[in-house]
Image (cartoon, rainbow, N blue to C red; front, side, top):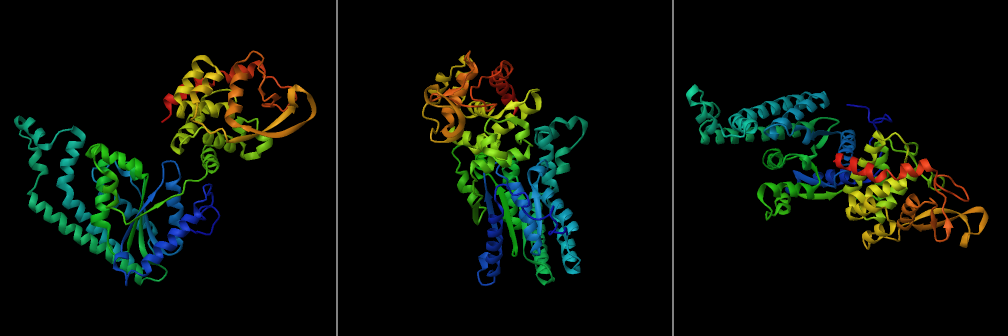
Length: 473
């Protein structure tokens, strides 16, 4: 096992969303729950749904949490369902992942190794029992036809496809049942060997990630596998999903009127939601993952907000424009696409504002792109924004345009600021004025005017966003 105390391997070393407390709580809760399993039989096995929206770091959470569990002596298998959903049956990929990780991570204890080898052998028996069904599934997957239909088409060639993949259905069902029962017993034996080994602890943890991104049929089959095959004593399973999206996928299979939420609940004993962090944490998390720090953009507020200016500005815009976390993810993707393809340095405030209009307020974006009128944009936004979200600004002139010898700090609604910004970009004077005071932007000067080349660049943003937005997911 890796040295968990080394800085690069320590759990949650780069935890920008403050997830470590949740991992520590779940560790104590699940281990505590298992500790009373002898007197509370229903605690012997457990399936937890770890629920969070896409883009909120479920994969990071699971991989870092696995380090904590392993450091506490637990046997942990991590399974990326999405990376394996090319397989026709999820059990096959799951077994291969278990085999690989057990070979890499098992202790030297002979009892554990022996029981693990037995479990893997029984797992292969399950795969062999499933083989005829898998063959039919493969034929259907790659051709779109049932084996029987292909067989009819190939009779003249004397190729009997159907008979080569079919068996007596009753015998096949009995074989699968017997193989599954033997595998469950072998998996339970691994847990017993863990319990008897020094330096290891129960329960065994199976962590399943990215289920909501899988093909709906694959996701359903994997959930069924967990319920019927892997739910054994001393094995705890954690399945990370965006349950709302997974429900939509299941409904696409069974129909719009299907109660997919209720259907999902039958697979889980409990749900734990990863808390949605404040938007500034989310913004910092997403920007840092793409290297979009201050050096990547001009930011007129960097003097006031410091190194976190980009994250702060984008988070304030998101809250003011009432952007969802999922839409915010798309905003960052679009901005990143533009950054990678546009030769000039971008200004993050206007770029962020225009991109959020495109993603979350398309009518206002269309108005802006069509006639560049800030008043029309403001009208199109109407009550869909929060004017109470404010941004710190620097004034270089006093009321009524009176010059002052120093700059003063104040606050302004970030929506009003951006509306005034749009006006300045398209006004011939290019002077940004708000409440009778000139607000310094790209340079902190007392009487600021945009340079022509800056104006030309800023006017391109709506078109850039449209192109990048049609490309980004």
